[in-house]
Length: 425
Image 1 (cartoon, rainbow, N blue to C red):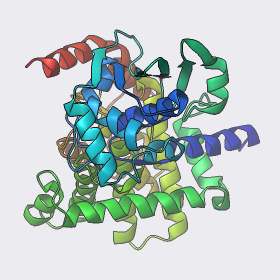
Image 2: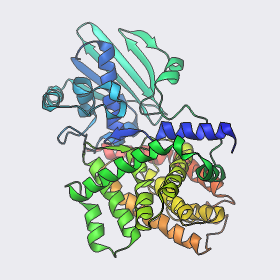
Image 3: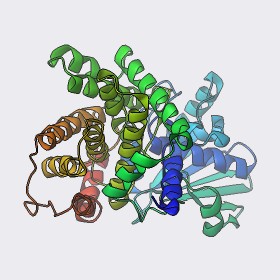
Image 4: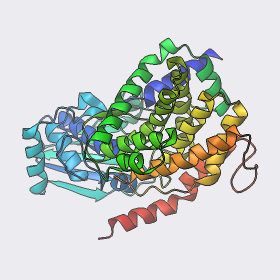
């Protein structure tokens, strides 16, 4: 494979497969708030958070880690500002203690943090403003969870967009133009594992640890345990159970980190945990597992390039589709069978909506994995839905592009209506 493509694919993996505690949208607010406090130079007296609709949607209903059950934009900003460590990036709330929690809770109860709707065409967009006496500071984030677009202190611009893009972006550096199903498979086949193994050792450790925690702990509805106890015993049952358990723990405020993908912990879980469980159940050698995780991770990223990080389209579909395609890869499937797995999945469930981050995201992972594994089993028997039926195209990559267009452009108004309904009291 061309060295330029190889190097860029490694960069993509390094950008995407990073640790994050809890749901990434409230953590992004906490990170920006901690950074804004550093710029301010003291503890804020007031905070204003201007948030796009998608940010509001994905923070409104999810518990914040290390907060003992705090929920919402105000809580995320207060925790980040008063107790967060910006140097930890997406693990900004790792060291929050009782004193920090109490201070944040009091700050919110005293109505010192205010939220306003930011009318922006950029789905992932927010601005944090802080004041303390005569001092003021602001941090603006666009496109990616830690991509600080601008920084101001007392009205003066300290950092411009061009400077930011060189220093603070996550997930936007590498050239993604060469991503394709064929290139991803070739890279997975040929990459020197020594160059990426550390990324996947961490992915396996973190994402399975939180899956085990979700199965044993008291999070959400306990969907993982319900699946194990009531569904027929099979590898697919166990794949769904552990992926759901990991998601419920994460959505339920567990302070254990996960390795994310495309800015999402649930997508990081759904694109890795099923593959790991399948490989372990089938005694597949570690080298093959690493290569399958390379494939699944990059295929998830490839799909999300067309959809965007936040939209009305549920990312569990993309990640589960990638997992099933990686399992076809693990099972010795041909490139055609891998593509057929993708098409069979996207022919079935291309329209699951995202109505915000919450406990029931785990159920969407289970449903998506059901459909994706059905697509896998069909493909392994040489069966696939025909091109040009519905939105399916001649090539799986074209189908992925079409689904992405529907999710990003076609469902744009749907997204607005979902947000409007969620904000109705």
